[in-house]
Amino acid sequence: MALAAKIPYDHPYAGGFPGLGAQRLPTDSDCLTYLSAVAAADGAGVEVGVATAVDTFFSRIKADGVFPALKACCILAGARTLAGALVPVVGDAPTNVADNFAEGDYSRTAGLTGDGATTYLDSGRAGNADPLNDKHIASYITTGIIATNTRVLGSGQGAGGGNTEIYKDSSGNMFTRVHSTTGITISGAGSTTGFVGSSRSSAGSFDFRINSSNTSGSHASNVHPAAPIAIFAGNNSGTVSQFTDATLAFYSIGTSVDLEALDTAVSNLVTAIGNAL
Image 1 (tube, one colour):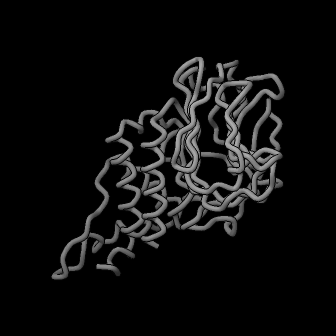
Image 2 (cartoon, one colour):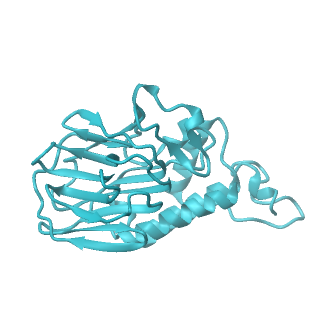
């Protein structure tokens, strides 16, 4: 059935060829709606193997109670084209600002690569769209950040204001804040690959997950920024800067979430897409 897994999931023989057995097809209703939208953007359905990887992702985040927390989310891998990769799992579609991302920046297995200079996505999700003490941001980095002082994603109000962001600082550390002035630093982790995510569910602290481990920091919530959260950069009160050169295969924004559960679902998804292609 190896060849059957490579045909479009909506092909008449997607479920298997007559007399040669059957293969699993996606069944989750939200997944099917998403895959249909991706197919419309791509001009063709993704392969069965990719479709079932996405279906497993939907099923997993629903079983773990993660799905309701996702308010803006994109799987930046798997789709046949950049347009398909920008179809949202939930929420508004991101804007490819000034069309600076081109088809050559997109890899079906690795994701979308920033140029560290001009390319970023406007998530369409305001920094203050979620409650002050109920917030998460997350991404999956497939190629580590090279340049320092660059943001994976973020929204802020500049020095002294409340910020929500994940970035590689000037010393090569990974740093994050969630609706706070101060934040969590993970020393020497600036070139980390894999899942990174931060989640706040209380006024006094929040968690940062990186390298398959959670770190909790006692950092009080502050005024949450209104600027739309940028992906591949930071958006401070409408001024976008600190563009990253990382390759990202996923991002999500929303209310507080079980970071370990989201990490497992996203990491398995990216691996499964790579195996399918």
